[in-house]
Length: 344
Image (cartoon, rainbow, N blue to C red):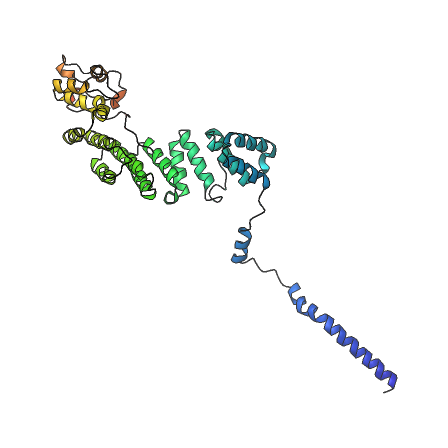
């Protein structure tokens, strides 16, 4: 081999070494180029789904305005922007608009904004579902409101939403279910526990279940925030509704004059008149207090001592839920909505 051949062979060898070095990364990557891209793992999907985009400065500004109490102006501004953005508005902006309209008590607007949205149960801990439920309750759609609160998860309801859920149940003629919700709310809110327990007692009274009313009232014995007569008024009502007038009158005997007057026209006077205690009925009707104007209470209840067959008439009382019944039926009426109401 000549010297020139040796040099040429060495140069060719060095060229191959250089190419091998340069081709190494390509060789390692090349097999992957012919492979299929693997599917995204669950953890990768989770990372993608939890990605939070940069906050919208418009939303931040309007949220700040709403937090300062400018609900009406915030609602108007969101409505103006939505009229321009039409279907391109983000769920976050629509939810902010619904929140502003809710604080402004524009319940029709809240319903229009949130009805049929498919993100109500996935955004901001289901706030959209709760706002829609509140709007339905305010607009009188009790079934829709109840279904909405239940879909949001009754076990996760805040105290205000649980009370609204209980109110919907009570207005839907489900007082026992409402009483349970008020009691559950009382157990979760020490500050308002007394008033919430009283609401539970009221609902049990409406349901005519005095034993449960007594159980709920037991927690009010040492609660200074609730007037004692408010509790005993509802306990008496519970026994009247249940038809146990004797025990109801036992509760009545512990009431002050004003609280006693709350029950006089609806329960006490009709009961006494129905059993023929004319003198006692007249005396009860003349007990001064709110809701009573002396002897005029007798006219309100339809009491007529001259007619023994109908000593208790329901003049002007609507249907079967009036404040009294004919004495010949041997029972007093169940109904009326006048209560010593607690905060609920």
